Length: 232
Image (cartoon, rainbow, N blue to C red; front, side):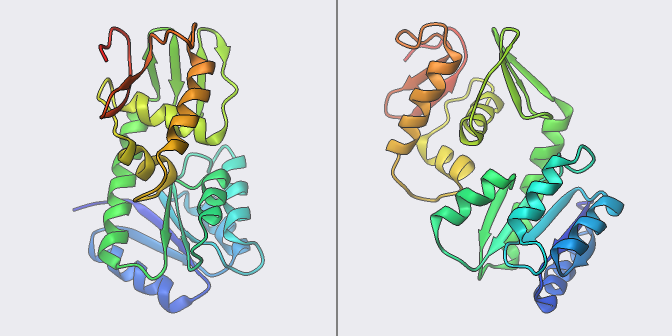
């Protein structure tokens, strides 16, 4: 059975306990907190493997809690799934900017949430096993969420880093635009031109010659691939 310690933060106690019971049935150890201050206290003491964090909680909202967790060495690597009843895309982007790994809108099914928890924990364990991904002169340190071109640290936005890490973790596999929308922007559908713009910006930062890329390739009709000696 799955294992792991999960902190659930939601001011609606009935929802928090419902999630906890569903996850306990899957083999997880769960704790609950009902406001932002309590969430930080429990996280510092519990050191959970994953946090499910509602945006609209009292005292400190979910965005601020996520930012504070990511500012502390002891808690910065804990993956966060943010919950919200709001529908605006800007909220999702704000959540990712604050450090969320995934974003789920209410109402949600417990089966979907449980599946996302399992996937994120598995992905995080793989990332911890291989903290630095090297592709030629490019290094992606997934534990510190930093990337280097040779010895020079790259100045990447949050979205650019998430895009680079997703491509690097694919280990030479072509990643479709739809997959990038899901994994980087947490969108099932959207304007893929947004991806093209970010790829253009990322390419200018990681390539020695952006006009003749040798590491970040466009695979026509399929998506993008990170690696050397790749035919398009």
